[in-house]
Length: 278
Image 1 (cartoon, helix red, strand yellow):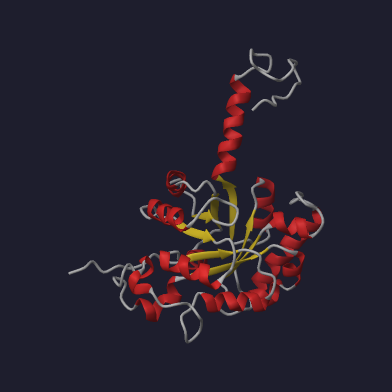
Image 2 (cartoon, one colour):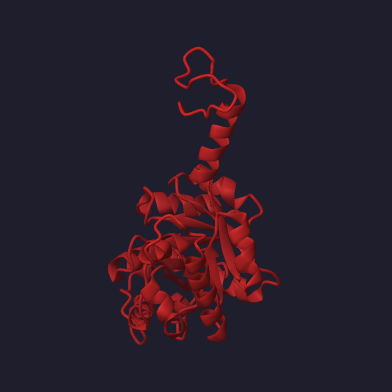
């Protein structure tokens, strides 16, 4: 007899059941090893990014496998909210989607249709051949598939902030996630995620989501920003990324152990001279 499989609960369910905000990080390296390290860190959720990272179906699958032994919620961000891409991700076994650049309630409603089978959506039927149903080892997968999937949409523009309440009200959208980097760019303050106008827009989105009864998360790699948004009612936050952590930590090692005036250094010696050769 084959093993019958019960799928893990969704990220949305975890957020709803949690007694505190859920804290997570990004894995952008495309590495299953990095994904497994992050999954075992004690954080609540880990985002596998395919929008700005070198991830395809095969590497995402490898990272899902690497994380599956750990009590962490894997969330995956596709590069675009395309119905075909979403179908492939869901069949791969992705249960928790974070879709970027959602600017309207109409766009959000189309994404809901993309994650649901006909009768409420347009998802192609191929689960018996796919990991999503564990190759038909999940009882009644087709009938219950929508309960095994969570959909979070990203608020990343001034346009989206203005209609955040409408987006949050869409049935089938489980959560909002605010991306201050693209939001800042859309507001004319590129690279200034902590600009007062950007902060105000993030806070407005949190308020809109909460008023609609939907949890709101925020990308906040600056600890003070994360604390501000958690205090404002954010239900989940992303506070770091594997590649950024490695970059800053390796730079700190070089700063500590390689003198600026050491042989081979390109940096002029001096007590206040920054190390620029690494």
